[in-house]
Length: 253
Figure 1: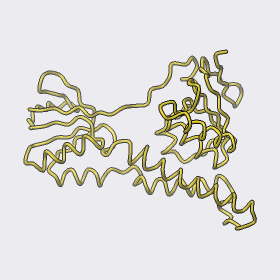
Figure 2: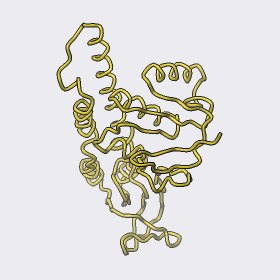
Figure 3: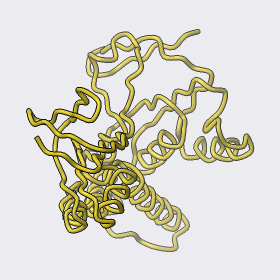
Figure 4: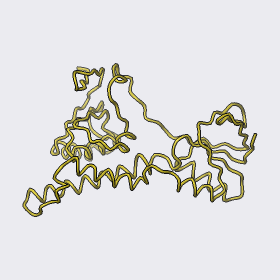
């Protein structure tokens, strides 16, 4: 049994900042993280997504300049898969190859004990981690979120990516259906479309990014349609099935 002044469940940006600050203040601190210390942003979200958006924009601008006869792009930029592989290599460099060693080292230098695994609270002031009992005086729960898979019949039987997969895997899909037209779905749609993927966004709401101003959604809709992204609004997926090598999505009439 080990007792700490503070135990932080979850090593994302918030949990890591709290743990480091308290440890630097002289308290004994343990941080429990099942996955990567640093959270989604540096490895699967903000950093890799913006790297890919920038790469897609560069390729888009070069394509427009080439059409106007202003430049002759490098051969690598003429082929979607080759250009995408280059963008992915840069994305992974920005995301530090999804290696959290530096983040862990910084916390340890602050005096934080970093523990790997899923902690389970078993009683007031006690949790179990990998068969070990850990006691605390104070507890911070900062476990973040996980991708929720919609309950659509047949979805579990077909290939499915979350945004984590999209921003960590090297493949460029030939075609893709994106369920949801929020910020993440829109970012991913534009990245893939600009590298040659045929993209359809299925959105239950009447417009894209419904939490933003309608005028912004209108501009984005026009831009996406010009880039060949298919948009289905007020559309609810009710079933998924494999048809040969293709995936068929059924929508409510």
